[in-house]
Length: 497
Ligand code: PPY
Image (tube, rainbow, N blue to C red; front, side):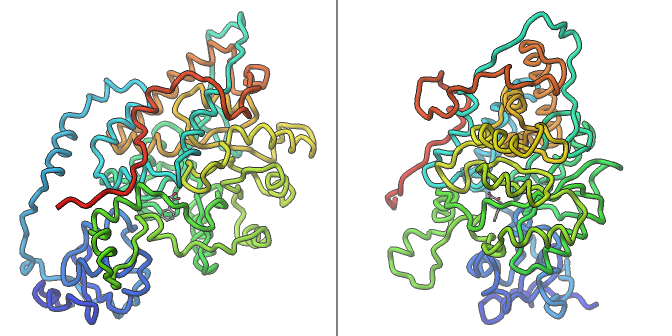
């Protein structure tokens, strides 16, 4: 195949003819411009140029080849013609890189909040905005933490706790921790290896990872990074085109994924204002919108930009179809009420995740751990509980092993942790994730001894006092570590010259 010179590519730098280079290959994306889920503006910024750096963090490597018809794949760029442009670092970027170099040594990290604080300091502002943002007034994201602080321990004593064991099974698969890695999207915004940091650490330590539909790495790259027999689950956003979903699910099953976690709390993506404002700043959008530039699309942040494929018509009627296309366990992620929990049970599913999507969807939704109380009570009406055929998981706000123990004591099978693991790799790569596992192990050992539970089975409701959980007001000690990393929302900014 003949090579295309960079100069030829540069001649196609408009919406009438738009070529871009990604990973050394030239693509004609002119006709794709109106279809790009992130809008055409962002592609046009790279028209006639190499877009790899902008493309990588937010697309799996194969996104462009699978979405663009073959005849638009024009050929490899001639590397000899590419003029290497010295990258000029902004003052902000220089400062950021200095902070990366001056990170605390990983030995200084003693809890999961430490990872978050490091990530907040060293992440590019857009990445931090996307990861940390939650919807509307961000009440729910904070409530997710606060709820755990309204549950108190009632420890048992004199139980010979010389040996304590926190290993368990999750949907029948061995797990060294009563915690799984929950799906978080776009891992390469925070670290060049993205989700692979999680896969590699999880494989080494016998922890289960839920692969995100919107990972930066491709599904196959993640599965390829796993060790033999490593248990992987898959989170699923259901595509409007069910054939795409079917292919994806069946491919996952073929590659050995054991459970499908269908996200049911995001028929439309929440408005995450930190993420939205970041985009405005970058594109100079505020000024242009105010000047009445009708060509400017009101930008809505990274997440909303790429979420148009998600099918809002998804309903209970689709459940039998999912059961017909896969033998994997099916779990609904994002259930919040006894009524829906009972429906999931009655549809013969394997479980539910009591989740509010890390506070990123419906603001002022209750926390998963609060919902756990009524949902366990409802499921008890269907027979003896715990029921080995139906698992309840909880996620949101977990930063301590004590949170995990509380949720399990109240009836959860295991707990999902998303952001905390993500921040651990943003800060220290795979080593960070491994350290996060170690912190969980240390905290689990200490807390299980102190509450008198030697195994996961011994975590029973009598060990906790959740009587204050439904009281949404009241005095609790301030969570200083969380509040320090929590970045308050900002209001609209005046323009500076
Ligand atoms: C989220 O951001 O909360 C997600 O679940 C991931 C995502 C990212 C982009 C579009 C839709 C969902």
